[in-house]
Image (cartoon, rainbow, N blue to C red; front, side, top):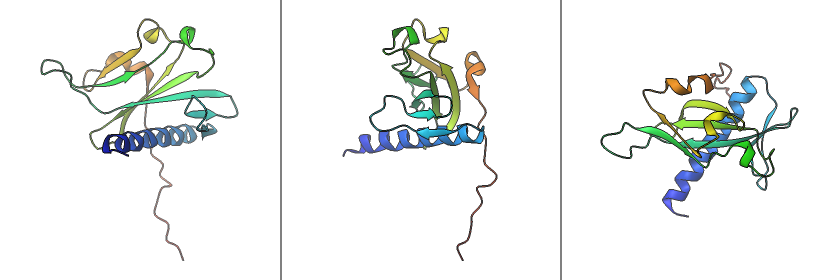
Length: 147
């Protein structure tokens, strides 16, 4: 396994585990999907399927500011079957691979109707503020000593 594949798998794991943690902290019964499923996270009691997308900051040219780039975002009308997933959770990672921003976008939203890529600038991302989720930090994550 090459370094790029290892980095990709590591970022994917961090993104999925963070999504599950954030949903659980919000009171949802979120579980990781099976490896054969096309979605990544399932809110089991509501049958809501979520596809996780993630990106580190990317700078395509010297004249354009860095942004998070999410590709293969498909509107519900173009998905088959239509309920293959209901939401995308977009994870904006920092340079070290930690989650810095999270957005939740419905597969029915107009922002993805005509395009299959979403570019969110690092600094000027007010256009996507209605999709942004605050990151909740779990205060019960204290170190427990084993006796």
